[in-house]
Length: 378
Image (tube, rainbow, N blue to C red; front, side, top):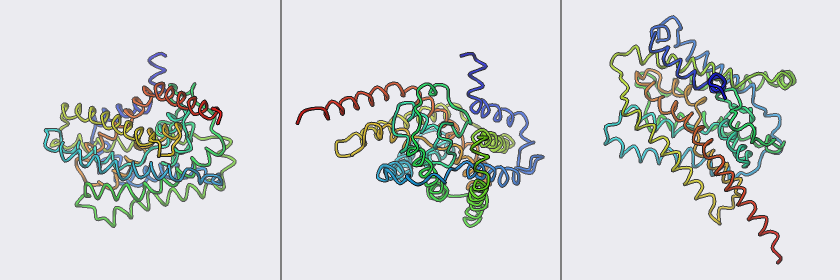
């Protein structure tokens, strides 16, 4: 694949780099009070567009057969929203004794508080051939064949994807809706619990803004979908690409605030250490979930294990960045807190794609063993 084609396919990651560079070159344009007026256009309009777009794309009309694998969903949600934040918090108690930038460490805690995305988790599960029904319980950007955070199908997985059954699609939709609403409530609470909030923004204001810019647009999107369903199914608008473009604007203004503040500096050594920690966390938690879900008493199939591994360790950038913008409004170090989440997103896709062949071979061999065992004469 040529360089241009690769860049086109990875346009969202390239976009993140470009908007950060643009913010560095001309921070005054997107700074609070600047020509872009991010305190209105970003804080209210941009975030509302992302969640209205999500509500518009959410196929809640297909929920009939979605109430499946409840125990498995509980396992994943408990791991990602309870165990994950607590484990990272314990790790940070040790890392705070190091010379790593404290704001980047806080950023690692914010990553741990995020719900999983439907996009990369589902795509990787399909690439392996696992149980995508499990995966898609997490996030509202639900085009199950499309990476919701980038608006495209990653080419590394396309040739391996299997068609999703109607039952799988229904479970995906149900669980994405469930996880999205859960994330809207649980993630801000976790962020405030572990990190506190901006002293200039009271709790009531935070949850009021979350309601107006997240919940209300989501519901309005669903109402509009009821009238536009046939049109949307026929035209298939690029919901993921729209959300991604708006997300780039949010990232741009966040870094404009940073670069306009001369007191904020990013330590290169700390950044490299954080990248190493992020990959270490992902690998460790994938091994842990693999170990837990393959125990004889777990009751999970090999396909379920694949879904659990990806879904329990992946975190949502699309929900995370707008949420941080609301909860930490007024934090001069908001962009530094956002950096680990911006790193975690491509890291989880990269690591997952590297592991796909190995995990697929394991799952296939386990399924063959299961079939041969079932064929044994009694």
